Length: 115
Image 1 (cartoon, one colour):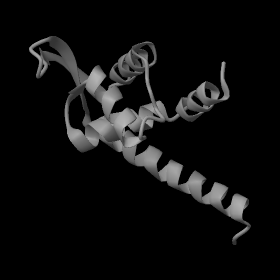
Image 2 (cartoon, helix red, strand yellow):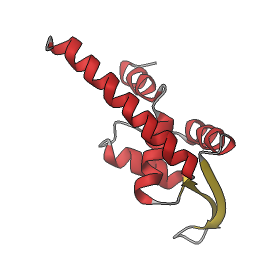
Image 3 (spheres, one colour):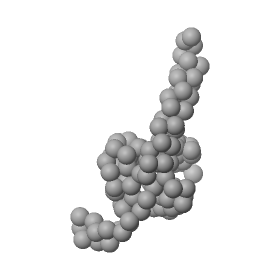
Image 4 (spheres, helix red, strand yellow):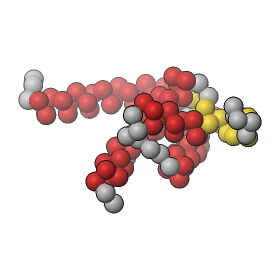
């Protein structure tokens, strides 16, 4: 595995759920391909999810009650499952964002010697 691939995998470890919930909370219901495309877009191509990574995460989030999936038709007239954050998902997102902000602050302090 190349260093670039390893770096991408490391970034995704533990953060994919947060990124998916934030994307759906911001943009509303989306199908898996659109979620992956949005994450690639906002990361300027640094995050390129394959469906073998994304769909198990979507299924896991749905099983936990954080997402709700419904069948619909895409803009290209294809049948797809559209996912939306539930109220439990939005609460989980808020908790995870708070935890992320705390950890980012700690890491910033450690790296830059402030405090």
